[in-house]
Image (cartoon, rainbow, N blue to C red):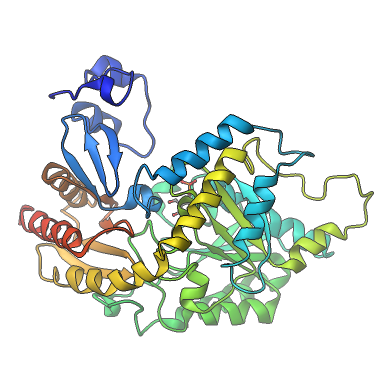
Amino acid sequence: MKPVDPTAVTDIAVRADADWLQAHWMPYTGNREFKANPRLMVEADGAYYIDAEGRRIFDGLSGLWCTGLGHRRPELIEAVSRQMKTLDFMPPFQFGHPQSFALANRMQSFLPEGLGHVFFTGSGSEAADTSLKMARAYWRAKGKASKTRFIGREKGYHGVNFGGISVGGIVGNRKLFGQGVETDHLPHTQLLQNAFSRGMPQQGAELADDLQRLINLHDASNIAAVIVEPFSGSAGVVVPPVGYLQRLREICDQHDILLIFDEVITGFGRSGAWTGAAAFGVTPDILNCAKQITNGVQPLGAVIVKPDIYDTFMHADAPHYLVEFPHGYTYSAHPVACAAALATLDLLEREHAVERVNALAPYLEQKVHALRGCRHVTDIRNFGLAAGFTLAPAPGEPAKRPYEVGMMMWKQGFYVRYANDTVQLAPPFISTEAEIDRLVDALGQAFNALDP
Ligand SMILES: Cc1ncc(COP(=O)(O)O)c(C=O)c1O
């Protein structure tokens, strides 16, 4: 590996030898593979990373679905450093700072009507578990303490904490970890007959009726909440059929079950609206977000609830000085993260992120669907500025082909996400059509370079 001048970017020497790499147990990474074949990024610039060999790598997934505005935005650097110079940390329990209140108020302008109160966390996983705990505690405060069961969905991803993996529906994230929280799962909505749908598939709204089956099985008096992503991102952009989310909403309303949208990916531009709720026209009772809220520069998540939920906690029959919801993190509402989020929301608005996504989305759609017929591609899905491809599994090795595609793309100067049997794209909102051309053309070549 040819190193870049490390002093130009960092005071840490760039090394790639096994001894140095062993100490860090990397997350969601094939550590043995990575350490034999390191892929180190040392700098970022707009829609690109610079790797340790000085190559420019197009960021085909906006980091991990979070850097839609591109990297190293001066406005965010300024906001974060200004905040670090004034109030770098303060205890978020029983004391406050203005940034979190400013941010919660600022968020009202683009949240779906009927959602208002914002509880901050440090990540999407923390947002998932927070929302589940809130749902149970809410029903308890309402005198319905038996409502504890959750309903998730196959292929769902809600982060990696125990609540999140319990309601999540990706087997690889669940199978090692034993007993979770009591949960049932709706069927996923990736139907064979919908393969190669552009945007929302036409068939499958009736899959939401499975919720009624689970209610018949457990009784609504035992069910706290349903949690779904408006579209499933980590499962490879699985888009809800027309009418599906509306049907879930109706059934939840009929049976007094809370509906939680996990908008950690769909939130704040990616789906061609500020939220997936707005894009799909369905308002949940609780909306979780993270990632794009700070453009990835600071860890921050949020759980936003309708007033009835907040009010139920506030009106509990207990002395006013007692904590209403005994939950929160050391880094909840971190002042630097809140400053980053305020600056990010300004940028998203000022640079018309939603409009940009809507302008680029049809282009991405026609480009990705032109890859139909590439080797081993069995499905292509898209929504907003996101696309997912399913590859037929190699015999006995279902995750191998996507990995091989990811590696070929990296060699060609593109970062894409590969996971399970899928390859995923989520280009930055600042991408040009020419960049999307290069990304998708390279992907088509990579598919066709796979072994037959
Ligand atoms: C829908 C959804 N929920 C939760 C998470 C977890 O977020 P984090 O990795 O910030 O904990 C993710 C991450 O990809 C996600 O896509």
